[in-house]
Length: 221
Image 1 (cartoon, rainbow, N blue to C red):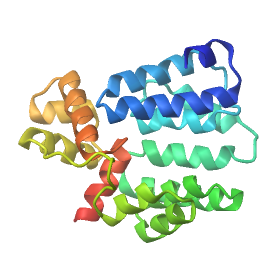
Image 2: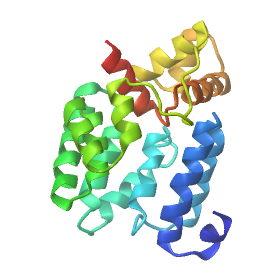
Image 3: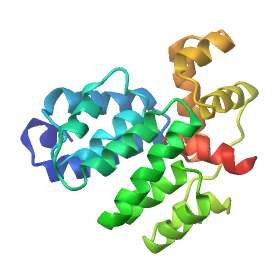
């Protein structure tokens, strides 16, 4: 990551950043994952060739902190830029209707591009879990197929841990779309404490983001 950040090609960032972010999330280190994106955004000058990395700004809840991310996507003229911009809006949407509208637009755009994994993700955000499972399966993403189907993890994959009552409260509020600050105000917790609880929740449930948490909670109802 350090080498790619200091002057590597865009493809190196595309390989290093998502892998590093996902590793930190899997270990419950949400703030470290966010720091990776902050550093990338500080060094990059546009979304050119790294749009898939830029959308993680919204996925990890940094849209308000790093507003240039969406501006970069909107300014790009590449064929896939509109699709990533729609996905970004879906990930950062405050309401369900807004999220669904942007996610469906992203799914349609990714379908035209042939980006099956991103199309599947957008379908999941839109609440169309059947379509998401179908597209994950077509892409060979068996972990995501099992995740959406609620099936047990394969041998060697992390199993769910049981959430404490406080973790369950934080998870439920985060899944409903509340920010860390709003959750903290409702539960009388600091932002950092909320962030810590969310990191533990992600690690126990084998999730990577609030979006996946919301999709999981939606499928359980």
